[in-house]
Length: 506
Ligand code: NAD
Image (cartoon, rainbow, N blue to C red):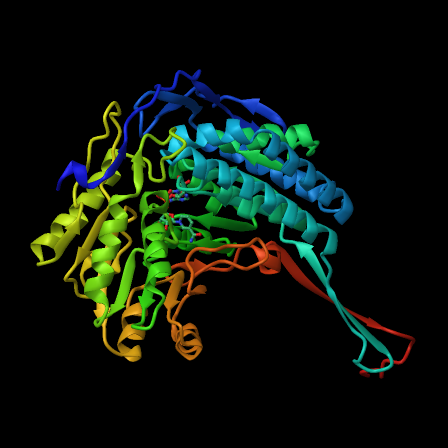
């Protein structure tokens, strides 16, 4: 691998921010852990200490659940009008906008993602709070007025109750914003646990919720690890629902843990998302989307377009052009405004990415570009070179499992049936894409592919209005859109007899 092949962005002025102190937010108060335990987060790109965090235990988690339970049961939040809830959510959105730079910088320092991307994510998050406000205002049930002259049926939608929200490290502020405003719009109360790797921006969200006027106990935040915080949040009998985003392995463990109390679990899990290129595709557009799809967020993205399935007639041309464009992707210091790809989340994860590539090489794969960690001048963090790997079979781990790094797997096909079989061959079913100038090809692929989202002649567009989620081992339930609100609602049927017309049973 040659360093000159890549567009590297060396360290700028190293950050000198104060250490961010992160506490739990329980029943409206900022508190340390009862035993005083803390842990630290260092910048994965720069290496310096970014935040010191209260390490939650069973006591903090139970207090937070109790606060959410009592607040819900008091009906003080669930009985507010949609107008009041919407007004509050809109206020939060404005505050997110006003604090965008501060939130984005902390997001960069804890996650290693580029600053321009972080800014865009925080802007997108504010939009989610605005969209959820519109749902709060328009939430309604249903009525049945055709059950006979003496009967009226009403279907009420009611908040499900106390929701545990557990989020991952790859899009900390965006993902909590795909869940929490929808839960609040529905009238639920919540306990939130961000990833131990990216705790700070959820804390800032807590500050903004207070400033916006959210009553105590409606949202509670506990910092810490899956054990014990996440574990208590998913097993406690006072929790009605778990909304989880993270790995499939933890998602399955949560489903099992929640089964004893039969909580509802909605889960957004991993993916091995294929982009299928037919021979008549608009190659220029496809190449750019492939490069974006694999390197965005350093490939640490559930929606990463981590494998392409290319018609054999165009495969060599596509590989050559993807390699050339990959060399131009600016990567390095995430605080530089031009950087498009930043650091890998931690060294252990970088090692896992490396081992996928090394194993593939041992199995006969061809590394067309990259294939190793790369040092960025002035930075001690973990960076992995943009990597393209070909000569694969669909069953190899690199082509079927979630690598979660900037590593593109290339497979080839000759017929639609073969392409569909490969696309559907992975255990995941989050998203998929098709590139063809033929509408019939795009429609056939969209109908036959197993995925929660299909992109035709595009990749990774997203809108608050459109539901998002996975099939198979990519999860259960949907976020965003009206479906995203429905996840947090129970349905209650009310049957009302009109007049004294019921025929006596006896
Ligand atoms: P992870 O599963 O390791 O952790 C996610 C969260 O779960 C963290 O807050 C963690 O502390 C917590 N946790 C860990 N063990 C737990 C347990 N036993 N009980 C309860 N909580 C527990 O995932 P990660 O490494 O933070 O995130 C990367 C994964 O997330 C990838 O697989 C990615 O595909 C997935 N992801 C999916 C989506 C989506 O929308 N489908 C979005 C982003 C990330």
